Amino acid sequence: QVQLQESGPGLVKPSQTPSLTCTVSGGAITASYYYWGWIRQPPGKGLEWMGAIGYAGGTYYSPSLKSRTSISRDTSKNQFTLQLSSVTPEDTAVYYCVRVEVAGPPVWGQGTLVAVSS
Image (tube, rainbow, N blue to C red):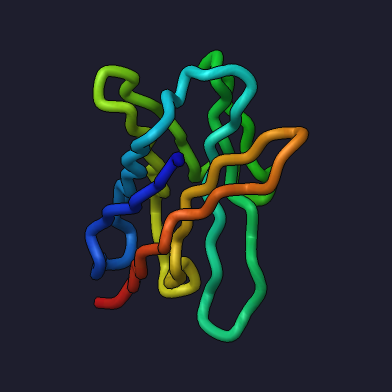
């Protein structure tokens, strides 16, 4: 059974570029035909899809965040990483990594809080 676990910096300052990592166990991130994404939820708000990296390494980003978002992967560690540049307090949210596929339900990590504050 695949499991996803996020790790992140917790508290960051405005203008920084934090990195969040999702470590995957129980399944390879290169396995067809899965997509590995990031979703966030600011306090009191709904879920926001940020982007994903596919089994073949292709990346896909939300148009609203594309200029500040980069997703990469380390297949040797079975991890994928989100970088979000020039953060502001509005980027404060719980960040989730998720596995998605066309024909099955998504699998979520437990989420990690990133708070942006000076």
